[in-house]
Amino acid sequence: MLISMSKMLKVAKKGHFAVGAFNVSSSMLMRAVIEEAEATQTPAIIAIHPDELQFITNEFIAYVLEKIHRSPIPFVLHLDHGGSLADVERAVHAGFNSVMIDGSKLPYEKNIALVKQVVDLMHPIGVAVEGELGTIGDTGNSIEGGATKVIYTNPEQAVNFIEKTGADSLAVAIGTAHGIYPKGFKPELQMNILRDIVERTDSPLVLHGGSANPDNEIAQAVTIGIQKINISSDIKHAFYVKCREVLKNQELREPNQIYPECIEATKHVVRQKMQLFNSIGKSSNYFAE
Ligand SMILES: [Zn+2]
Figure 1 (cartoon, rainbow, N blue to C red):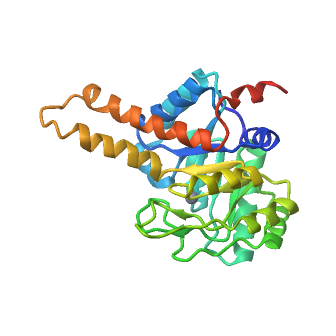
Figure 2 (tube, rainbow, N blue to C red):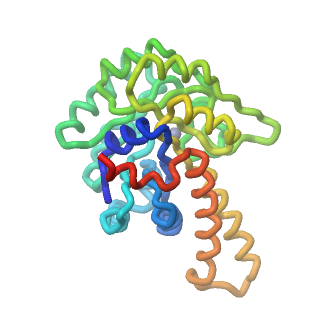
Figure 3 (cartoon, protein in one colour):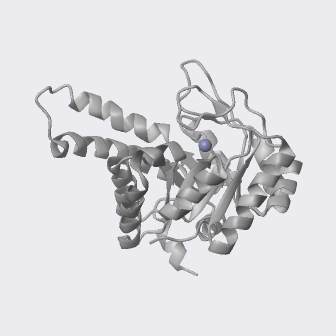
């Protein structure tokens, strides 16, 4: 079933867990996320980036929504890193019920103005909006990109940003990077910044670039107060590592012989993340109130 992002994150906050937002840009990746969510009774967010939407086309979204509507598990269909009004409008026309508008590279006041403009357009039609403050690092190998240097979210500004924009959730920069880290690079999350933000606001908080961060840091961030965590590179990595392995057999050419193992490998990582976020089996929390 399709539920609102507000409901998704409100229940997560109350239950002290985070919902995984998995970037899917093929029917195989989508099946891995939806089927694993169903197998474990776990709520999940289907995230699609504008570049991914360009590739899979709007018609694919009808298929995603059909899967969601037929499922007993709560899902949200979310645009990841909308970069412009045009990105957001395209997503809404295709059927998304939640969007991110990323003005994090803009000066502070311009970021506020952009997010507020999107909120004013989206709220009357029941679409939730995620903003971002501070910038998420870029490891140079992800579709989401990012800044080359992490600028941490200023907790005081975070409160002001939420009040002025009316955004439903905020992506905070506490030391994550998009993509998979190069060998030898040790990312570290700034828990003190997160604690400071959590103490100042009731707004749901989002962690981007959660791929390849140490598990104990992610679990700690969930305990402190993160309600949505984006996962993209990790599931794609698992899928294609298995594809390459399967395709060593030069004789194979049927999708139904090649992909099932790759989907299984992806599901394995999806489940690991859900466990880490403490969201496994939490579907029932959405029907309790
Ligand atoms: Zn991101």
